[in-house]
Length: 411
Ligand SMILES: Nc1ncnc2c1ncn2[C@@H]1O[C@H](COP(=O)(O)OP(=O)(O)OP(=O)(O)O)[C@@H](O)[C@H]1O
Ligand SMILES: [Mg+2]
Image 1 (cartoon, rainbow, N blue to C red):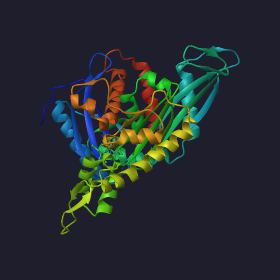
Image 2 (cartoon, rainbow, N blue to C red):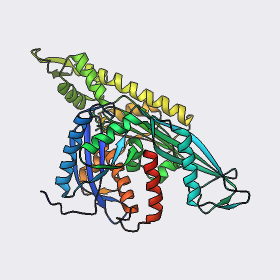
Image 3 (tube, protein in one colour):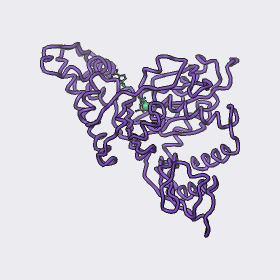
Image 4 (spheres, protein in one colour):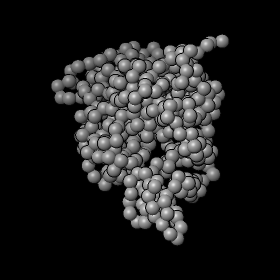
């Protein structure tokens, strides 16, 4: 039996439509994370961000964990995992609590009661509560800072974004992870995790949006005045572009994927009509030569559709208020050649590619927008680890409350 030599670690699992990625990290002693090992395997048993076959997904998860264990020399017993897809919903919700007849100090128990009220009134039997993300607290009619503890008042309100997922969606994912032999310590909405990896507090305060363009879904998370305002999952991603190419060009998926990555969106400009590319045929069909501009046009049609849906979401949710922190693209599909200018034109806001920050150990992660979700999940795993009493500076009683509540929320 293998002996693992590295301890005091934590792990994250990004179960995507295209790849399953497991990361093992430890605190770097400052504000960052040292990644000790990773395992990335092509995804199977997943469709549009959801598990479509528990057994097949479990095998992929097991393989990615084994790779991450081997490269880090650390044992993975539990993971913080990401969740996304069409059955994950978010909506604003307000709850309020009378503190008594006379003004008194707000204590942690009050916050827990506010959250319990939200849980009781937002969840149907077929749903799981994933997050209650506080947007603002209002005490006696006045909006206060993000932390109301220690303030005095007679009535407190919490405006929050409530994120829920269907019970089946959550349990299929949890079961796959369990079958792979590890426990799930927390489930985190993927765009929230990606945002943790690429944004700093200033950007959230100024207003910023994250768009994670993955294989199966494009996830949007919108931040204004320091808090998340909205999160929407669009069930369109890079795999659809590959499928479009394969269908229109009658080419194998692998050839279509290769064309997509090689050509991207840059070859549709006037003057490129003459340039050609070879594309393999299906079965006995021979290889053909086609104009590069045709490939670009097929890709562009789908990418424009995705970006227009994102623009509609942003218009509806920001009321066209400019986002001074800009728009950040993450996910594997954000690496598409020529995407940034097109995104900037359709979204009508400064747009950049987002790379994970404050991670050391594996230099290539810093240039990998497809691992923003994994790095954000690892950041959440790190916080959980430090607060659980395992890490330095932990405050056990607070976390005990928090964990108890989290388990109740996750069912
Ligand atoms: N250089 C590139 N150009 C264009 N597309 C790319 C490039 N590199 C990766 N992709 C695409 O990115 C997609 C995979 O992205 P990612 O790894 O973020 O997905 P995922 O996390 O597995 O999926 P999801 O989050 O949607 O469930 C695939 O469709 C792949 O073809
Ligand atoms: Mg993803």
